[in-house]
Structures are given as structure tokens and as C-alpha cells.
Image (tube, rainbow, N blue to C red; front, side):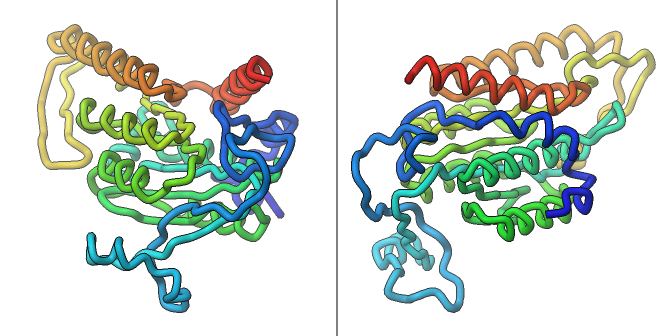
Length: 303
């Protein structure tokens, strides 16, 4: 595969530096290649993996009629033999992700993380899928582990463009209900939503025994409000506008941000989520290197 064709989302030097590191699951997984990830089961079998929306050409014998009766929607039951780790990357594509005061939009930073992790997962023999959402689902790519599939993920990431409000809460609840077989879930978002509702999503994912991580992306300006003149603030996912003097609002703003960050971090700890707060002025390869090393150390300690 020619990584240079996706230069906006991939960096060959970063891939080279990270290629020797392995992305480990933090808990036993179902259907893994022997030697990579622990499984809670012994032996081989065909396991129910997930529900997927019916599309023309699917075998109607796989329709779940109970789900149809309950939701009035057509879903296919998918099964997967014991194979490998399945990872889902869930990417926020709402309008607030276009913000970038220091030269890079949060969404562009997020795409680099998503593309790099996808590359590493496929090249270590694991399956990766991608879900992109704004106020609804933009892309839903089930996990696979071949180069053609990886190319499709790159193309989808390169073509995506943020718009609309965030549907993070609804998307995570739907995901937790639909994906019944335990998996790794990597969420990349600025988390501009109701925090209590977000923590309910984390509880839902934890209940389903998913190993999930949150890359919480924020621009440096969102963290420090380092402005020295009156400025017009506009809601990027709505129409609200506020003209304010930074010197007057900075302290209450910073206090609110601290409370918001602490609440999300504590909620992640409570539900065993791997929390990564990321400022977009940090090199993304350093963020990913720390993420991979921490998981490797945990896996070695568990062995």
C-alpha cells in the first residue's frame, strides 16, 4: 500500500517509529489469534459477534425477527469464528471538531490518530472497523483485517468532513447495544456534550465488557483561553453568539473547564476506561507511543 497517497492522514516516519509496538487489549477478548490477546474461553467455536443493518443482497435467513418486532428495523445477526481482536474506532465528525487555533483542526488531528491505529492493528493481524458520526452515522465499516479493507478505511477518513451537532451519546448507546461480543473500542472526540449522559454511555460500554479508550481532544485555546482582547464567541454546532472580555470570564471559564475535565476523567476511571486527554499542540505520535507502551506494560503485568 502506498502510504504517501494518504499524506494528510498518515505519516510514514510515524508508522516506522511505531511499527515495532503492539496494541494490547487490557482485558480478555473473545475470538483472538493465539499468542496476542487473552481470551476468556477455551477452544474454538463460532460466536455471535454483532448486529448489522440489513442491506440488499444479505441472506434473509440471518435476519433477527425479534429485533425487527421490537424496533421495526431490519438487522442481520453476524457470527465470527475464533480469530483475532476486533477493534472499533469511533470518530466524532461534528462541527466543533473543525476548531483549531494553533494551525491544526481537532478533526485533522483525530484522523491521524484513527488512521495510524488502523494501520498498526491490521499489520499486527487484528481486525479494525470505523464508525464516523455527527448528529447521525456518517460511516459504519465493520472490522476486517486485510489491506483492501484498510485502504477503504483510509479513503473514508480522507473524505470525511465535520458538520452538524454531535451525536456522541446516542451513537455510543446504540453501539453498546449492537456490538454484543466484547471488543476494543477507541473513541476520539472533543466530548462537547452533557457529561452525565456521556458517563452513562461509559457505564453501558463497561457493562457490555468492552475494553474502551477515550482520546479526549482539545485545542490549547479551549484549555487556557489565552486571549488578550474582546472576542466574539460562536457556538460551532448552533447559532448562539457571545461577545466577551477574556479577562473578565477567564477565571470562571477555567474553573468550569477543570470541573468538566475532572468529571470525565473520574468517570472513565470508575468504568475502567483508558482516558487520554490530548491537547492538539502535542505530537500525536508521542501520544500514541505512550498509549501503546502503557498497554504493553499492563499486559506484561497481567501475564
